[in-house]
Length: 430
Image 1 (tube, rainbow, N blue to C red):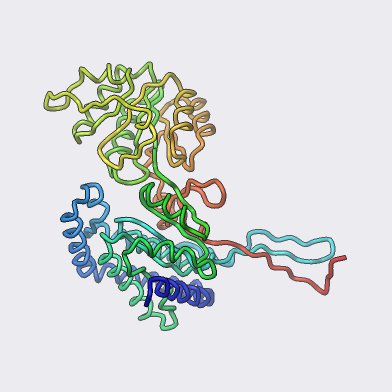
Image 2 (image 1 turned 90 degrees about the vertical axis):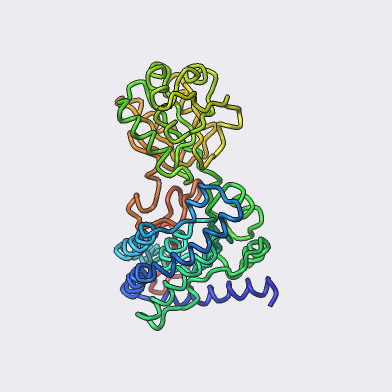
């Protein structure tokens, strides 16, 4: 079977499965999701064995520590996947919601009703937990899904998908077996072949680095929902509670630096820079963070020392630095003069993902929230909250920075379309 034939078969099977999914009740879908969650936990050892094989291969291939962290599945992450599926099951069914209803002067009744999108392709790198999140969300919203993970996670992804499908079939014999499929081929050519099949595929959502997302968007013939990168900012205002600011900055940068909602640029208001910047830099240096600093910050930090008395790791920031997503223990630092300059910096260099202000001044906070043009903006909270689970969506299928359609974390409601239903009594248009 050629590559094109194999991709066409996957897509055709997914389209047929999507028709069957539309016939399942909300109760049947929830029963399957609960069984899937139980299976992930009961088969954790099998999944982690597959994951360990992936990790060994990835280490030998020279993947960075940040990428290895994304790939690893410990007991906590397996439990989190199962919890995500249970949370999805507990959410209202997004299909069949009446979004609008009206009666025209001629008596024609119109109803706008939510429907599944159809067949969704998810392309992602490294993080195998995406397999469970994406499959669960697509299933609950009535969509068939074709998953294309990175070659470094193939064994893990296959083990997760197999556990979920087997569990669903065990509790619901009419579960469409092709509702959750993985692309078994690792060739790059598989993606453009799959995304050329507009008669079967309705939507593509890439998750990963900027290079992957741009490559997918450029080759796809089906609609693509995307975010190219997560250049997220925290602005510490002159009226910030500095203890709170320290906690937020450390969390935004250090909790998981490899994810898209981690802070990449710290903006510090000029009046507090001399006090706050050396202090927070010393805390960040405990994790050996490399600082790319503007001239003013560089001068302030050149005399600072880490907890061992060593100079901080400092580099002059370049124009390119401000728009770089490091996904690592590296951070841009800039001193700005007020909220207006902070907003201008973010709107110019940011990626419209997630940005935060720390301040006690409500007027400045509201200006920041209103003027920063990003999918998620925060006042006195970490950028790390931009996540479907944290937003109460159960899980997410991705973060969209597009302005047309879904924006921000994409949960169940964002995975539906709608159709208009007209109910008449013989009306004709004149």
